Every structure is written in structure tokens, then in C-alpha cells.
Length: 195
Image 1 (spheres, one colour):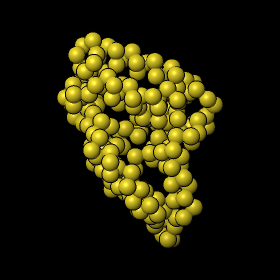
Image 2 (cartoon, helix red, strand yellow):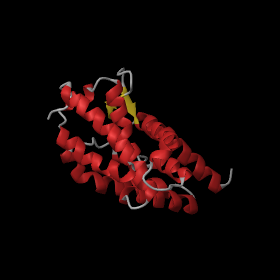
Image 3 (cartoon, one colour):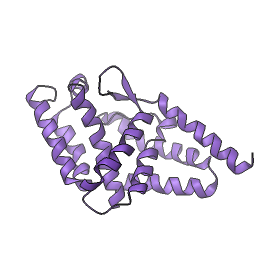
Image 4 (cartoon, rainbow, N blue to C red):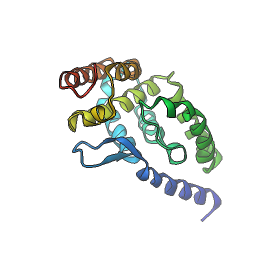
């Protein structure tokens, strides 16, 4: 095995660690918490399914790859819960360190490409990044809907917190934002989300 392939194999095996990064939300049947690998895979499938609802023309291959790599830094930086304001204070610094190390493991051409794609997702300036972010926001909402909103209730999440986060969804897809808004309104009425 040459050095390039060795680096690629090591990176591929590192990606397996996403299966051990557990998020705060549960899978659809509520039986256990979702992991980062499942979240990324689910987003990638959703990108293909929902691409027609993007606000702008998008390169779907780019969106799918963006979905698959957008949380890899959590292998080293850990997951930051969407509504944990204290953890968010150090999130950027932790993720920046992890990004340099993780993508630096790859051959330089691939490492640079994936790091640039990760940064594109983070800055939210392109049509692809905006749509990927919409999916990143939609995916857990669909799981919350499927499992009865228990995660929102458990964490005492408010409508204001959710809607502030969902503003980025609207930038990528007005139609998906409306779906989310309908789900949120229903869960407010059911008492799973605080008004």
C-alpha cells in the first residue's frame, strides 16, 4: 500500500468513529439516541429526495458530500447540542482544531478539498451550503415529529429557540421551512415545545 492509500484508509477508518458520537435526539422509533453517522447519512438521502425544494439551483453531488462531512469534526470536538448556549461558546475553537487535524490526515489534495467544503458549509454563503443547512435543521425535526416530540420536552426547548435556529432553513428552502413550521406549531399545541 502506498502512502497516499494508507492515508485514505486511515481517514476512512476514522470516519467510523462518527458511529460513537451520540446526539441529543432519538431515532424515529424513540428507542435510542441517534449518532452522527446516521444523521449525516439521513441528510444525504434527504438531499437527493428534497432537492426540488431548494430555493436556488444546486449541485446535488456537492450537497450530498457536504452532508456527509459536515459533522466529522465532532469525532474530536464532540457534539454540541443545538440549544446548549454554554457549549456553543467554545464550539468554534474546538471544531477548528479538529478540522485541521482530521482533514490534515488525508493526502493534501483531498484534505484541502474536504476542508474547503466543510468551511463552505459553515459560512452558509452558497446555494449548496444553504440547502445543506436546511436539511441539517429539518432532519432532527422529522425525528422529533416521529417520536412524539419527547426530546424537545425533555430539554425544555422553546418556540423562540427553535425559530431562531430555523431562520437558516428558510435561506435554503422556503418550502421545507413551512413543513418545519407546521410541525413546530403542532408540538406547541401538544405541549412538547414551550411557547
